Amino acid sequence: MVAVSENGVIGSDGGLPWDLPDDQQFFKRLTLGGCIVMGRGTHESVGRLLPRRTTLIVSRNPEYRVAGAEVLPGFDDARAWAERQGLPEIFAVGGAGVYAAALPVAHRLYLTRVHAQVEGETRMPGPNDPAEAGFSLVAERHHAPDARHSHGFTFQTWERAAP
Ligand SMILES: NC(=O)c1ccc[n+]([C@@H]2O[C@H](COP(=O)([O-])OP(=O)(O)OC[C@H]3O[C@@H](n4cnc5c(N)ncnc54)[C@H](OP(=O)(O)O)[C@@H]3O)[C@@H](O)[C@H]2O)c1
Image 1 (spheres, rainbow, N blue to C red):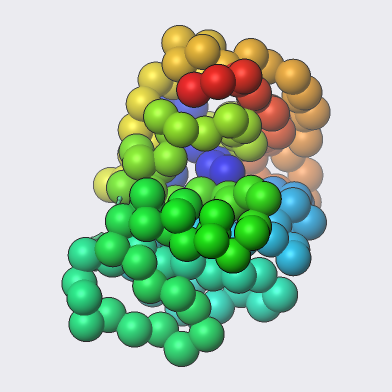
Image 2: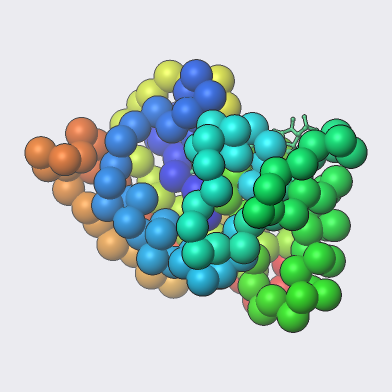
C-alpha cells in the first residue's frame, strides 16, 4: 500500500508530504486486524505501533528491538514469519526499501495517486505505471480536494496473477 505523488515522491523530511485523512482512513480500514510490514525508518517516523495489527519491522541491525512488534532482518524473513504464523496476507506499507523488496512478489497493489507535484527525498521504486510490472487495474475511485484534503487523489487497486 502506497500513496505517491505525480512526481514519484512518497516521503519528505522523514514524514508524509501531505495530510490526507481519508487516505489514512482507507489504510486503517484495510489493514485493521491484519499484518503490516514496514522499514525501521517508517516505524520511527510513525513513532508508535499502530493498534490492532500485527507489526513486522525490517532492520539489518540485529540489536534492534521494538516491544510489541517482530523485528526481522529482511522482507523475505518477514514473509516467512507470517507464513509460519498462518497469516494469509501481509501488507507492505513502506518505505522505499520495503517497497523495493515487496514489489517483485506482490499480488495486489493499493496505490493512492496524489494529484500533486511535491518535494521530498523518498521516492517510490519501480515503474510509475504498474502495468509495466504486469499488474492490471481492477478498481479506481477518485477523491476530490476539499477543506480537509489539500490535494485530490485517486485510490487504485492493481492485481496480477503470478508475479
Ligand atoms: N507515501 C507512503 O505511502 C509512505 C509509506 C511509508 C513510508 N513513507 C515515508 O517514507 C519515508 C521512510 O521511508 P524510507 O525509505 O526512508 O525508510 P524505511 O524503508 O521505512 O526504513 C529504512 C530502514 O529500514 C530497514 N530496511 C528497509 N528495507 C529493508 C530490507 N528490504 N531489508 C532489511 N532492512 C530493511 C533498514 O533499517 P536498518 O538501517 O535498521 O538496517 C533501513 O535503513 C518517510 O518519509 C515516510 O513518511 C511514505
